[in-house]
Structures are given as structure tokens and as C-alpha cells.
Length: 134
Image (cartoon, rainbow, N blue to C red; front, side, top):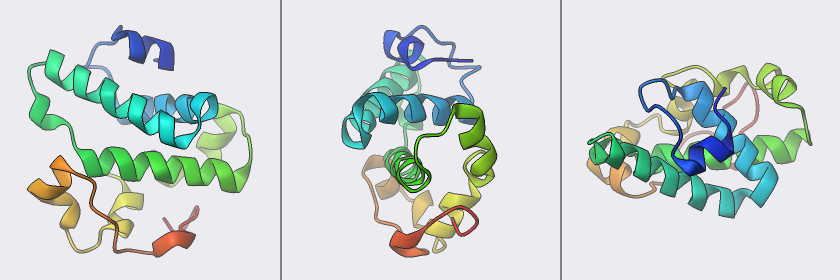
């Protein structure tokens, strides 16, 4: 399993860095730094990884921010859970493509050039998004 330390050090293989690993890293960062600092660190790391892989265009700002804030919201709602308990309590965060993001962006705005370049606000279920609803 990839750790936040490995991620920040750039000591990961981008070909094996899967969605579950992304969630694990942002979960670690939120616990260590709080949501706002975690998002900045995660964004910087993802941009480094995609650039090092020769595909900086694969970085997606809205997915990064929306997912990080959704993980942060779940942590705040559920309290401090061990990783395995967090995974079990939030199965919708681990499917990919993400059903949680699809519910938040039902109009397709997630798949626009603007959403790739900058954070686009969700139009879906709104601020009370929780497990089972988003």
C-alpha cells in the first residue's frame, strides 16, 4: 500500500497508483494536516506525478478537489476511524468511476475542459452529502 510519505517523496510507480491509493493518501494527509493543507499537498503531488509520467494533461482539478473535500467531510461526520473501518463505512468512495462524483455532478460538468483545469462547484446533492447519498 502506498503511503503519504511515499507519495510526497515521489517514490511511487504511476502505473500502479490506483484510485484506492489516491483515497488512502488524501485520507492520511487530512489526518496529518487538516483538509485545506492536505488538498494543496495532494494537488502538488498529483501534478508532479502526471508531469513525471509525461502526461500533465491527466491531472483533473475538479476530481482532485471534490474528492478530497468529500473524504474530509466523511472524516468529520464519522469521527476518527482506522483506515479499514473508513473503507468499510464508505464503499461509494472506492468505486471508479466514482458514483459519489457522478451524483455530485449529474449534468456532465465534471467532464469539461474547465473542470479539468480548475475546480467546478458541484450541482448534485448539495452540502449534506453523506454515505449512501453521495
